[in-house]
Image 1 (cartoon, rainbow, N blue to C red):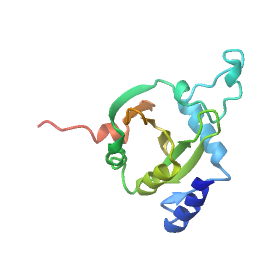
Image 2: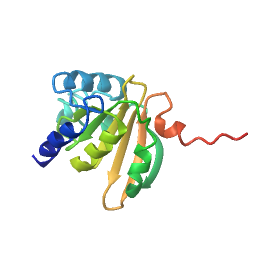
Image 3: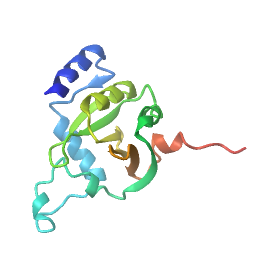
Length: 165
């Protein structure tokens, strides 16, 4: 309940271009993300996850690739690697077994949504569906690990590159 009260406040303080909550088309967005980046479990493979729509993504990422690991205190500096004027899908994971929530937002609003949510895991997805990046935060160790799915370079990889000339 706390999150949804804060979300209402954020929607008032950000323009529709910076933060949009796609209530009506949220399921179709999640379905498209899943079809591109997440393996679907079949009932006979795992009876406990037979109805795995819009959940259990972390254990089911296609071609899950490690990007980097850093202190969770530095999450802001990693979110800043996203292009300021570009919108991304933000998928918040409140519980791995529950349907995830999706938002259309720019990095500034994305950062606020993440902090207000208190989630230990969230996904940033390119709106052209070229890549998905998982921020996996481990509170006890105070570290965050980034994993990606998709063949394209992510904003987190391209901004790390140093040109040698």
